[in-house]
Length: 185
Image 1: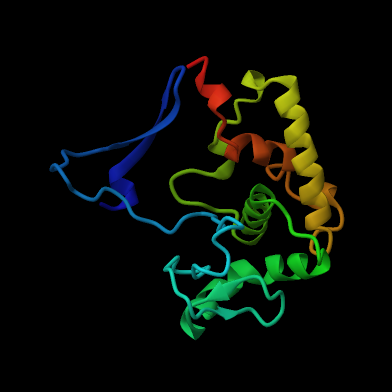
Image 2: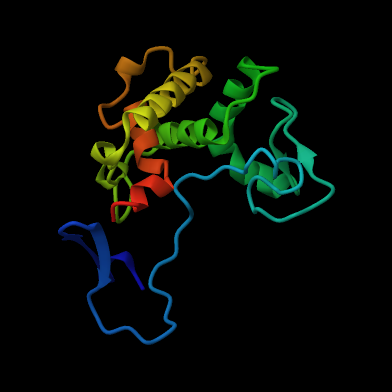
């Protein structure tokens, strides 16, 4: 189904939704797209291709950062647009390694800077649920935002030069899914 056959809507108390503008057959594919951003967990690095996510014991590593690994040249080339900025960041903080959530947030920042237009939703459409977070959780996310700022320093020297939609703290409030948020649902 083409994105035009789908429409966004707001559901009070539940946030944004997506629905079809026509009847749908059971099992019909409604929409398919590449993920906006993703990272492998630290535990998966080295055993899964960074691009196609297939398990492979003979992966070729990025010659620059030596972290990203790919099953072949094709996957490495396809991943380069998403990886090149991250690659420099990873090299700049050696021998340290950022938490998975910081790497994910970094990829989101790079994607928002490189290609701000998205299809059905924009990143700013995502709910943050900041008001439902405990002060302890907010402090933890602020710490992650500071870690992200240090991680991205080689590519983004001054956070204030970024578009307003790119707020490091808000990125973490939008991508962090915590069980405590579900307690009050």
